Image 1 (cartoon, rainbow, N blue to C red):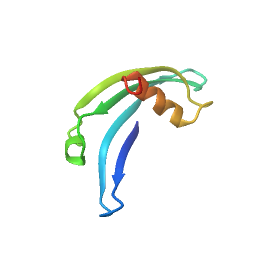
Image 2: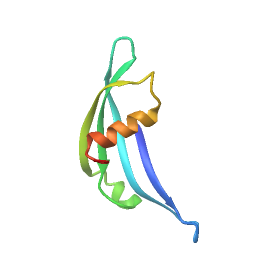
Image 3: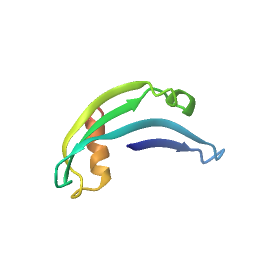
Length: 87
């Protein structure tokens, strides 16, 4: 599973706060391992304590991702779009 964390690093206090988290889980790959399907979930909360409860806010799927031809950031972008962000 890929865990994407968004952290806010304060320039004033130096404090680091996790403000978002997403899970991208492999649901299966093609026989040649080049294409993958992924389950996506973004979690509810804007701090570690809330995010650690693992309450799903949005869920979706990425199908037919070219996992060996594209960088993981392509998968993250597709995952966010699959759950309705960036529209």
